[in-house]
Length: 352
Image 1 (tube, one colour):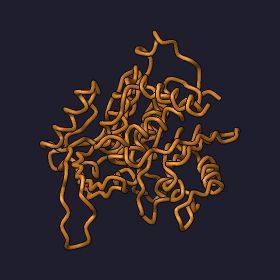
Image 2: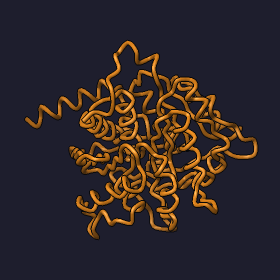
Image 3: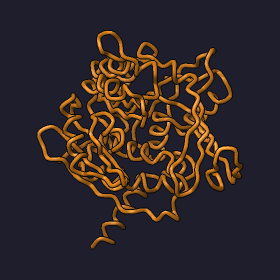
């Protein structure tokens, strides 16, 4: 199964590109000695400052992977020091940041990420300028006219100006994705694992305007109401298959990609799901889990744009997530795509 027609190497620079719209956040990642009980003290053993958020992580990862086409960012930041950090980080990676709107009355979104190595991370987040993003502030047609092909939007459920439902059941995200499609762009969407009781309704409004959906198993469960893990945390693969088929039934047009630490399912209309299992990562090698899902998504977008076979895309996406786990911030563990392809070859040889 292929995602489209092959593009010759010499044509790649002149054809296409990916624009990543949505969250742009300054992350301050604190590595803790342990997670304290309320009122107790834990040491911050190390601190890293990075640029995070769905759109920021994915577009930065694409640059690190050596994506051979154009890359652009679209969203909102504040006219402040953190906004300068976001722009400088993107521009240093060769990403067009002209689509970022500076809002003088908003602080740039920022997060304090508390990380204990080998455990899940905890986020303390201020939405700032991200909360002000609306479909009226972003122009997909501008990027389509400049030759871009893919329009990524992330994270839904962390962009209240796009998530809110109107009286007709539409959301700003649905209007933005519809505008992107009408401009000729392929739309790709990611969620965040919110516990909003309206999760299914809000993301559901966007699904009919989504060509590709790249989400984790928890988000797939919340979007469909399907319980994908049991009380012991074990993944229910049959339930995940049900969730994927429901996402297609609710409007996802070309592909619903659901990833979990153990496995990836790729659902497409009219064909059997493609299953790709990951290889376990030694817990001792995990520095931080921040950004692993975004690394997975970036590799998927890379492969979609370059019309790779689905199996190759999934293998690269697993390898990107594994590499990300070895970095302290959301993006500093990502190598060039050539290194990921070498990782895949080594894993294949190890399986022989």
